[in-house]
Length: 121
Image 1 (cartoon, helix red, strand yellow):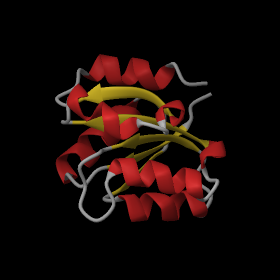
Image 2 (cartoon, rainbow, N blue to C red; image 1 turned 45 degrees about the horizontal axis):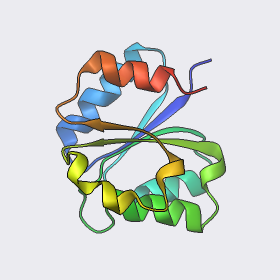
Image 3 (spheres, rainbow, N blue to C red; image 1 turned 90 degrees about the vertical axis):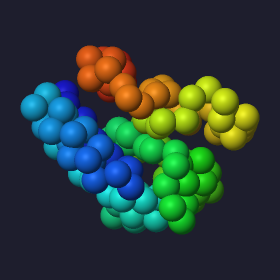
Image 4 (cartoon, rainbow, N blue to C red; image 1 turned 30 degrees about the vertical axis):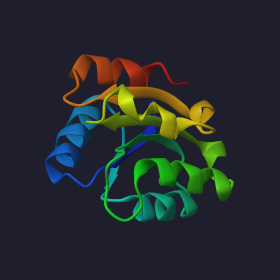
């Protein structure tokens, strides 16, 4: 079964590129530009995989994950981080590690990204 995907990134090129990758894989793909819109989509009933950028204006990815958990919205979503931030930012994951299925650094290998998404059941 192909799961829906929500891509959350403030970079329009990333939104379009990642959407195209997964549409061709047979997924229904939604895109939003920030954490606030991500929360809104989950509250409206999004159920699936979230590909979440970390560095975004307003509400960054870490705060978005914390807000998802605070509101009890984590039950129907699986979160993968896609970010230009390397491993130096791992201390900000403290307390939310169990909600993150993978951490993929940009620029990412398309095959690795697809494989990471396909591992989630």
